[in-house]
Structure formats: structure tokens, C-alpha cells
Length: 336
Ligand SMILES: Nc1ncnc2c1ncn2[C@@H]1O[C@H](COP(=O)(O)OP(=O)(O)O)[C@@H](O)[C@H]1O
Ligand SMILES: N[C@@H](CCOP(=O)(O)O)C(=O)O
Image (tube, rainbow, N blue to C red; front, side):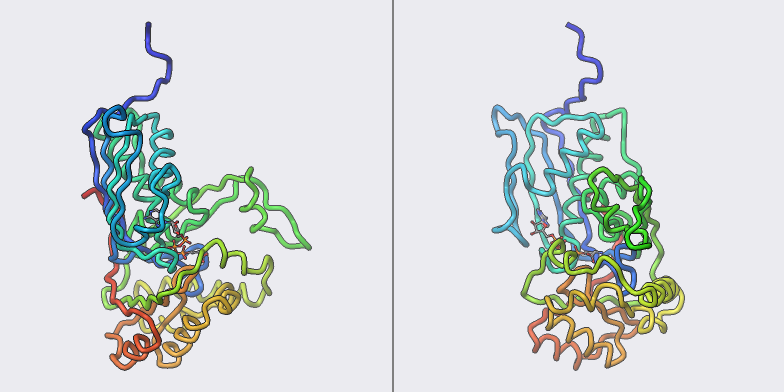
């Protein structure tokens, strides 16, 4: 019998790929759902193709962050992203064994879920390439798939491209009107409205240092996205447009402008009630002249500064219950 037309290429048992993917900090103050920064805190994921008769369809071993919390079955984010990407590439895996070494804390605003998606996508692309699959993935396609998975491109594109990123979306259907405004939130929420996602890397000024202040508490991104209003005052939107544009200058050539450039009126104030200690820390750091903002949807605080962080500020944050880490700016996902 001849093989079915378009039958998937089956990956051979014994094939394996390891990928290393960085954490990310999204928004950087004014750049809600657009700016992101890759940070040198890495998850390592190894995927091996196994014989299901011998090793089962799927085994997942997780050490480090989230080891006792993430599901070790078909719902695991890396597995979902991996399988979706293999299907996209016309490739099938008989059985899968995953080994995850997690260093990115979960639900803290450091892009752990985007990193998991990028790991799955990059591992699938690496396995398909090793098996000489007819299709591969370009970097733009990785940004597209990971952003579709995550629902916003800022974290995902930073973990793919590294450095700082400017990312954007193009709605595939006309954006509906609400009360005279174009309702982008409704358009993105509509399941029938696929988006095109784009992103480009910008190289960060070498003097800029990034510090993450990580609290013990967790905060779900989807929950705090629900705290955002559907409409905002035009003056606030205009304010953020100026600061987001300024932020690209501050990140690349004028680090002295970081304090002004990290101001925001679109999201942090609306989420502040759910992360009072983090919001207070942002205020304290900014009052001391350090450009600080909530990292992603929080509750981690990100500080960007062309100077070493003064010890008294780090000590005060530790006293308030935060772990303080300087995290170099990282390159994007790589095959290990
Ligand atoms: N490496 C991982 N493996 C499996 N699931 C993960 C991984 N990282 C994150 N997740 C899932 O994503 C959730 C956190 O996502 P989210 O609320 O978007 O926070 P974050 O800011 O860390 O991305 C975790 O509770 C977990 O279910
Ligand atoms: N732009 C998003 C970023 C979420 O980042 P995460 O690291 O908290 O998942 C948002 O602000 O919701």
C-alpha cells in the first residue's frame, strides 16, 4: 500500500534536542504588550523521541521552579507548544520524554509561560531539522507561533530574539467600534480574529544594568489582565505613546533618560491593588532616582539603571521581602 498523501514524517526514536530559553521582562513601564527585555535566567528543556511501547507516550521530569506545581501530562505548556509546532511542520513523534530544568520563577512577571512556549517551539524546530523535515521555522515564524500561544508578543519575542524587543500586532479582521472608539481588546479576544505578530530586536546600551526584585508571592497574568479597563483617557494614551517612544531612545542611546522613559499610565495603576508591596517598591526606587517598573504583569519589580544599584536600596528591598538579582541582558533561545 502506498503511503497516505501528506502523511507526517515520523521522527526516529533516539533523536533528541536541548534548548535553553531566557526569562523576559515585558512592558518596561510604558510599552504595554509591546516592549520586552530578555534576561539571563534560563530554563533548559531536553526532548527525546522514544519508543512508546517501551517508554510510554509521554514522560516529563521537572526540577527547579514549578516542579511541584506544573502538570506532568498532555497539559504541560512545553508539550502543548511542542506538539502544536510538530503538527505545523508536518512531523509526528511516536513517544516523547521531556527533561525540564526550570530556573525562571512562575507567575512572577518574568515570562515563564512564554519561555515554556518558546522552548517547545524551538525544540520542535530542532527535531524537525535533524530529521530533514521539508519545512523549518524562521525566526519570524517562531515569534508568530509563540505570540499566538501567549496571546501577546512582548515576552515571547524577547525570549526568541533576545536583547530588547519592539513587538506589534496586526489584527486580521477590522477592529469593531465601541462608543466611537476602535475596540482592540474585543478584537483580540474574539476567537475568530487571528493576529499577525511582528517583533524586532534592538540592542541595549552597554551601560544599562537590569535588576529584578522578586517577591515570594505569585500573580497570574490572566487574572491581572482582567483588572485593566477597556477604555482609557486619550491623554493617558498620548502620555504613554511619548514615553514608549522615549524608551527606545533611552534603551539604546540615552540611558540618562530611563527615569522619564519608564513612566506609565496605562496598566500599572490599575493592577496596583493586587500587588501593593511591589507598587510601593516601584515608588521608593523611582523617588531615589532609579528607573523602576512592574515587570510584565507583576509582581516582580524591574529596575534599569546605568549605575550599580546603591546597596542601601537593595538592602531595603531585601528587608521588605524581595530577592534582589542583577540579571544581565540575554540573547534569545539557543540549542544547547
Ligand atoms: N516551564 C514551565 N513548564 C510548564 N508550565 C509552565 C512553565 N512556566 C510557566 N508555566 C505555566 O504558566 C503559569 C504562569 O504563567 P503566567 O501567569 O503567565 O506567569 P509568568 O509571568 O510567569 O509567565 C504557571 O502557573 C504554569 O502553569
Ligand atoms: N504585556 C503583558 C505581559 C505579561 O508578562 P508576564 O511575564 O507577567 O506574563 C501584560 O502586562 O499583561
